[in-house]
Length: 123
Image 1 (cartoon, rainbow, N blue to C red):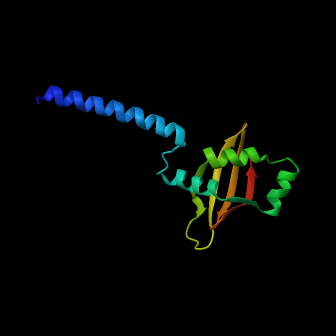
Image 2: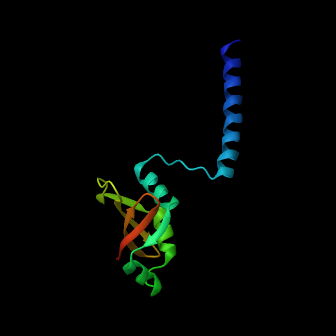
Image 3: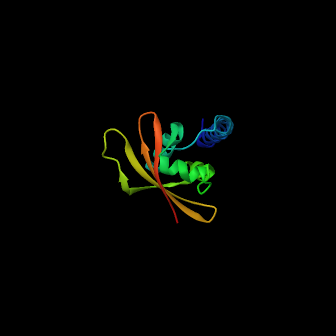
């Protein structure tokens, strides 16, 4: 088998593999989440949400929309310089996000089974 035939089989295999991965990736909603920012946000998204009473008051008075929180958990940016990741019980992360022409900064305590939003700063 010469080089041209081997290269042809290689290209056919790559094409078939790409098609299979494309359909599996689409159906399972698989994400590429290996970077630290993405891993923290995914971990927080999977946990039960809880709110500090002050944050709950912002939600009740409609100053803060829960859609802003959901968007921050999906598209936000974790500021590791302001976060406290050395704690053993509940690590705290600062998540910054722009949503509807406002900048939100959430202080989230990432515990074992819940993610508690401790503080919200709206700029």
